[in-house]
Length: 156
Image (cartoon, rainbow, N blue to C red; front, side, top):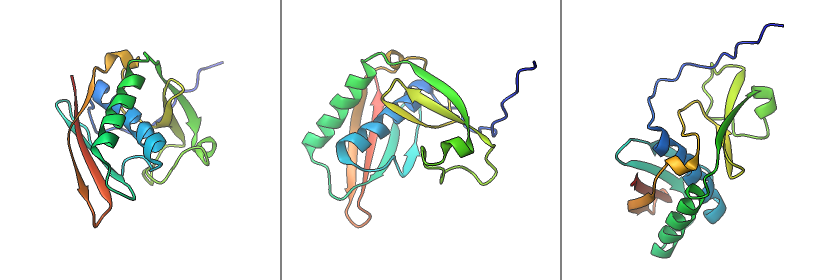
């Protein structure tokens, strides 16, 4: 029997795998600590990155410290980063499919960071969180009108 070839959409970005994998961990940590959704906007680069979140209120400096500590604890847990392929139909109800492009392939890729996080993604990732480094928030700001918190971070 011939092995079926999985066809995914083309990917037009070249991520830095440690930073991109860290984004997954930050997103899940934000969900767990603040009860918000995944980032509403992201700009992920090798030297520094930024993520925007919708929150009810401005985070405190203690919140910033808690986020940093929690993300670094996950990174230091040496979790495997794995992928699986499922149909869009299987993904319904399990993942938010709103971010998929209109012409998305019928097969989607799930990226798992141990049992900590899983999401749909076609980007590049490390094989283990031990390859990420140390997560450090370098600045953050709050937009009261939009109820948006932007964090800027780097890996060392």
